Amino acid sequence: MKYKIGLIVVLIFAVLQLFNNEQLPYKAPDENDLFSHFEENNQLQTLIVKNCYDCHSNQVNYPWYSSVAPLSWWIQDHIEHGREEMNFSMWGNYPKDKQQHYAEEAIELVKEGEMPLPSYAFIHRHANLSDEDKTAILGFFRSMETGN
Image 1 (cartoon, one colour):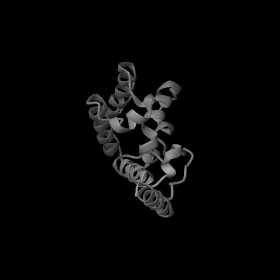
Image 2: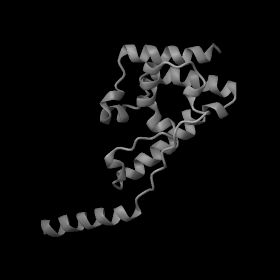
Image 3: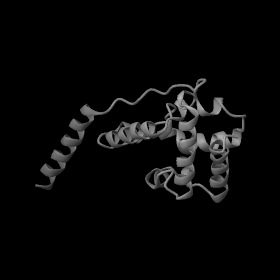
C-alpha cells in the first residue's frame, strides 16, 4: 500500500512538471534602470541589486528550484507581484512623485523588516540585512524622498 501511495505521489509530481511556468527572461539594465539615474556607488548598488532585484526588476537570477512545480508557480507569482508593486528596471519611466512614493514605501518596509521578505531572506541568507546595510539602503532612499 505504501508503495502505491508513493508511486501516485511521484506520478502527480511528474505530471505537475508538465504545467510549469515559463520563467520571465532576464533583461540587461538599460537607461530606465534605477542605477542609471544616480551617481555610481558600486557597494550600494551591489547591496540593492542582490537584495531587491530578484523580485523588483527584470534582472531576475532564478535559483535552481524555481523550475520545479508547484514551487515554480509560487515563485513566479511572487516575482510578478513584486514587479507590479515596484520595478527598478522601469524606474526612469515613473514620474518623480511616483519615484518619491516608492522611496517612502521602501524606507518604511526596510525599517520595519518587511523587505526583503522574511521568506526570501530565510532561503537567501545574503538578504538578511545587517544594521549597516539597512542604514545604507535607507540613506539612499531618503535622498530620493527629499528630492536630493
